[in-house]
Length: 308
Ligand SMILES: Cc1cc2nc3c(=O)[nH]c(=O)nc-3n(C[C@H](O)[C@H](O)[C@H](O)COP(=O)(O)OP(=O)(O)OC[C@H]3O[C@@H](n4cnc5c(N)ncnc54)[C@H](O)[C@@H]3O)c2cc1C
Image (cartoon, rainbow, N blue to C red):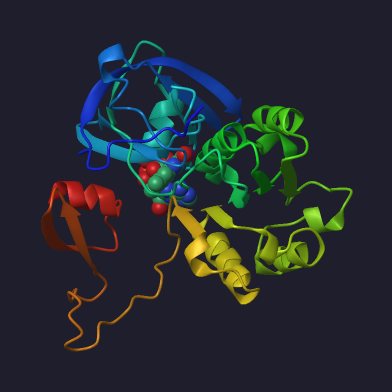
């Protein structure tokens, strides 16, 4: 099977899709599968690691949120997993009210958290994920294992307890299907593990110790990090300090808990300037370049870009 590709300059658009299934994954996570009619299948073809934007009206407001596709890119299945957040608007709606047969506006897949795949590759992909950060990683790893018979994958996956692990069974199935090529490490913060190294939160120190014992930076071709901002940044820093090439350490951020330090453009360096607290964002779509300011409380760059 060849790697799925998507049209390079496809402009993202929303379509109203029926919900085929809402399945409980853990106490606070459900998967939502959409029915894609045959005439839209091509539009919803995705590469592993991409996400969709879901949009609906809630209490008179238009609410839109991004969700990574968690199915393999070869499956033809459009499926996301939504973790319920305390006080969360959209996740509460999905958990409490969304039912099979309902319709939802779903944007065609976007995003660049995707490795270029080829059956000739013989690479080692390593991923570090925490909580719902598993969603794009599961899609990437399952697609790699299927499409690249000479590649290997390692997943370091952090959760609180075994019962809070999203896709526990799917991951075990992958492990059983590819025992020689998939190395799965669960790190649990609130449950004792046989190996002390696997008990606690994933942070820079734990990754350092894993690099000392189980995994060498030199042995990994591509890193994929997804989870809370602080974890992702700490892991990235540790990997780069250990010699990883930053161009091969890929990140997907669902949410930034605290604002990252902003670069102040030097006078005359050609960079667009932004007002205090805002970021200057330049987008190029269909050959048209637009620069706008992204305020710190904006939903996401994608949402802001679509509003321009
Ligand atoms: C590219 C991308 C892919 C994503 N993929 C997934 C996915 O596969 N599964 C998934 O469950 N979520 C995913 N998210 C996050 C998702 O878009 C929503 O932000 C999340 O579901 C919360 O929405 P809400 O309306 O329930 O919460 P809101 O009403 O927006 O927020 C409620 C409270 O939670 C805080 N908050 C918002 N988002 C998060 C978060 N992710 N982590 C911690 N605190 C948060 C807010 O600051 C606020 O205090 C993704 C985000 C991005 C940008």
